Image 1 (cartoon, rainbow, N blue to C red):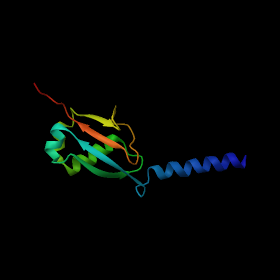
Image 2 (image 1 turned 90 degrees about the vertical axis):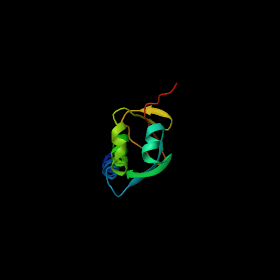
Image 3 (image 1 turned 90 degrees about the horizontal axis):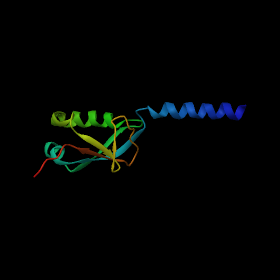
Image 4 (image 1 turned 135 degrees about the horizontal axis):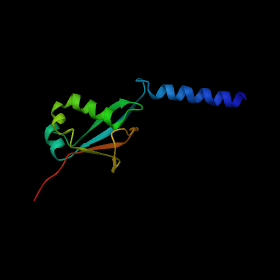
Length: 105
């Protein structure tokens, strides 16, 4: 029983650290089309708290680049080249792509 109790304690400690702001992850954000235009960047590093979601990253980006808000309701997100929902948790080294609608002829 001690081994089980110890294992449960370890899990509790780990889950406590997930939300701890002292632990962080660094991701690379890629900007496409209009998102590139409004930020003036093709990509940038972003450091967020461990356990952050793509939505948390978007809020952080919109605080740095308020003009991103104008396209926030029509963009899609991709994490490591796969489309995701905003509730997806980002991990260290991930690439988060901000993809607004693209039109052309």
